Length: 446
Image: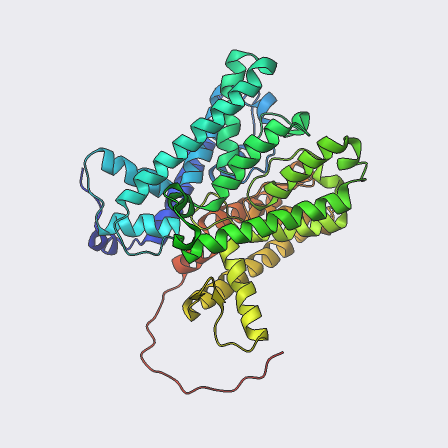
């Protein structure tokens, strides 16, 4: 088997961004074709249903228009599960692993592809990272599946306990958000083992593979990279803040936490502090949450999880860079500093560009879907669009009522959210090298 080389990619007019995009498109199309077969469903579904479910699984979003438990056969459910696994870890990472298993060394072309797919910026051999990522994934998923298996077997029996433990482990760790039940995880609302196991898998999966690789050989906080420190502190701060807001505004809400006892309220609040940034699994009716929490969830879905993780959004580190840059400006400093390290201007510009592009995608999609589905409420549509672009999958209960054109808008949102807005821009744009340095000009802002 001949491996791709960068020169060959150039001859064919392909670059890492285009190959990543095509690989996800292929995963979606193949998945839709398989889901449309009579072996995948208990009753026929439309092409729109098949493509929507395939896109949702491949982009690890979790929005659904078909009840997986009642409309999908075991074959169809396994297709969705495999798509979540491939879409979560990344097709390019799987491809690189296969090459190495066949004795092939990762050339410059393959390393560039994997680096682009994972947003991994270090210039080093990626072979060790790919192996470590795959090993970590299967170790973590194995532990998660075992713990869920021990919990599910007494309730569901041996066969169903084994199968559902695997399905929900993959759905949680990869942020897939799909459930075998129409009410997601409502049947286990307030059950602390489910919150701890699935919530733990969601958190770990949303940290990013490079952070997990560093934590695997963790020796001291001081030796962690700036990226890992920002990711861990940012995630912890967002989790704590979200938990406090959910408790404050939902504790007595009869449509959400109000129906549970004190202990159950605590665990449901913990779970819903975890899930908004990457996974669409829920224990309560999101359509019944207060306006305050709805707005917070939209913000969290926009932020997302960690770079080179299964989560999407602008990423926690991007959010942290923007916060630190704003703080530096307010203090009159020329550059933000965190944990004794200066954040370079190139990272700040990339963060600003990513946040602005993502915001424009949200506004554009919201405008278009408000034309196709004006009968639905603004907040519900706003929530749905950000959920799709953030590849989160939470919904206020309107997904199945969205029109055919609206579905395709959401599918495009899910696809863009998974490959990343910057990847799409790099795919469409043609970067040029600035050969002339222009004099500075004065611009009045604010």
